[in-house]
Image (cartoon, rainbow, N blue to C red):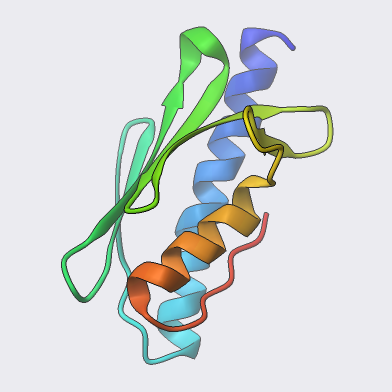
Length: 109
């Protein structure tokens, strides 16, 4: 993948994370604050815990830091997959956000 293709796909992922937070806040009583600064989105939950999603341009990866740990995702031609487990990014984000929010939350691309 070229650097430009990576940036297009990675920026779309960040936009989907932001849109997912907006949808959750509008359709549930969960309060998930999201703030974007450059290539990083920080989700802050009611208990003050955070999930940080940021771009790693030199590696063409997206990294996520949550209470559960740190994870690296690469685009496999279809989806962003964890480089160790093979899990899909949005499935992992939903699981970790649900744990931190103490209620079920779903994200999608």
